[in-house]
Image (cartoon, rainbow, N blue to C red):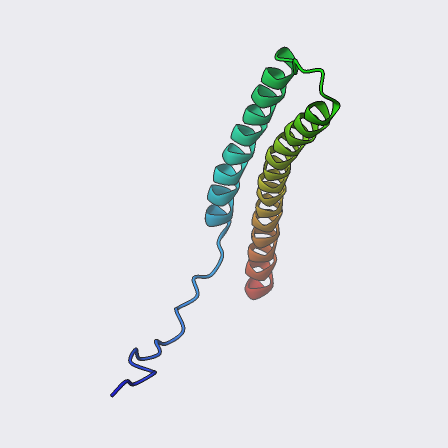
Length: 109
């Protein structure tokens, strides 16, 4: 009654070759997201710094300090990852350009 494999396996998707334009476009998008995350991190840290914790309970102070640190840290991690991806994509674009120029010169000779 029940066939475990009802869907047909599809052919592997065609791989689109990398081009410098695609790399630069991805780097601009990733860099923009990295800058947005950085701005968000600065905003969050400034907001936390301007509103101190009003409590006399030591446990509340420690937990709220840990949560604030974790929130700023996670946003900083996201900012760093997007920035590193942007740098890597720019480096890949330069590498592809160099390969295109060297291959073009070697085929002319």
